[in-house]
Image 1: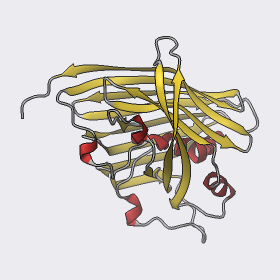
Image 2: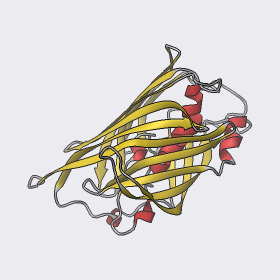
Image 3: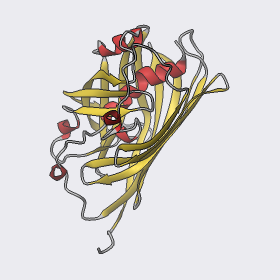
Image 4: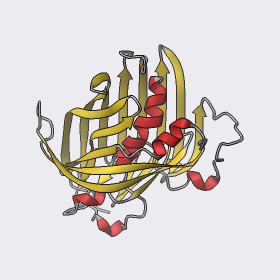
Length: 285
């Protein structure tokens, strides 16, 4: 299994399981009285069957203009299932009340030193106005066609990692369905609440309670239903994401993710997770 295909088919669907759903009522989270600016810095180890196969860093910056998320990562060919690969992803948008509104997304990956996949998307509050993905989807008779409605009210894989907090109800981060478009395929991630867990902070990282969500992958369009990887993901019940709160910023973000694969459990765990805010009084309207 190639590392980049592993990331796109298995890792990204679980990452986006953290996303808020567009149908959340705007009144569910009150808009802050003060403008919040700050950042969340996180580093993750990626393990397959207990063996470290890669790492990535996630930097999220919140300011007056909205948010910007940057992810950089790599895998190492330490087993026959994973090759050497690198990836760069970036997303930006706005948060209005309880809604995350994506505006731009890009992805650039390479394998064994050669460019493999690129995506560039521009969005208007989650509705795609322009998208270019390489390589393009091959024309196949069994591929479910992408229609205009599949590119409306969606989240890109990075914007989906920001979850506005609902005060007093951390479980609200689960029990929802998330619409996602990654440049090639449109799919849903159905979440459900499993419970909470405690994590011990190391090296100044987050220490405290996290919310544990189970997830199911539901392909919608752009996929080929007869492909083994699609069938496997549809039936995969070993999908889980842990969300850690960053109360000073009023958001939650992934602390740990796991995906069951045919060759062992794929685990993505934060080795560093630090959020900090700078509170600035909003300018008078």
